[in-house]
Image (cartoon, rainbow, N blue to C red; front, side, top):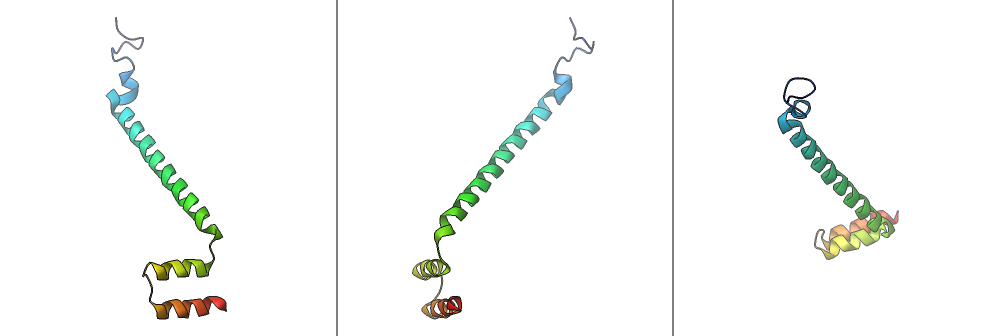
Length: 80
């Protein structure tokens, strides 16, 4: 027997034969990835909240991102 609509497609007529279901799951996955990235950025911001600018400067110098001269100059700028 055919569906109530008489077309014989059942629920597939509403979902385009599964295409919209695939699009739906892709959207869900994208939303989850976005949400997780947002959470990781927010938690990273909270971890650095207790650090002073001089602490961050010391870490940059320790990692070799800046030279001793840059460190001294930036440290003096931060004192002002």
